[in-house]
Amino acid sequence: MLGVGYLHYRNEGRSNADFKCSSGAFAGNMDFGIEYKLTDHLAVNGGFSILTGDFKKIKATVDDKKKHYALINWTESMCDVLIFS
Image 1 (cartoon, rainbow, N blue to C red):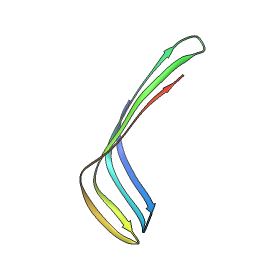
Image 2: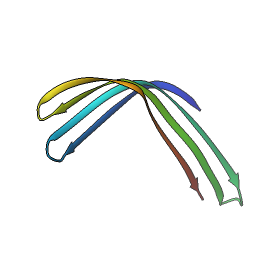
Image 3: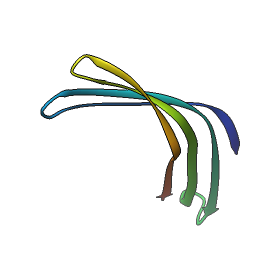
Image 4: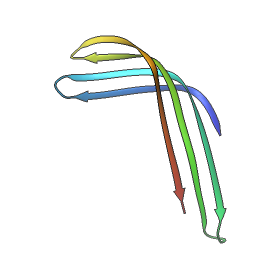
């Protein structure tokens, strides 16, 4: 399965200051799955998924001060492999 769409990123944290940031990007994803029948009542299946987006700018708030940053070559990717029985 292939897909495209909008990816929203949000992060919040606290250390010496309150921190929030958010961004959005055009993104794509791919899913692949397979299932193998062992018996009439037992099967093994697994899959592979990847999601990636290319972010151009980010909004950040640190101690109630808002800033906008331009990003150079920040690509966020996520990949997972699942195996079930």
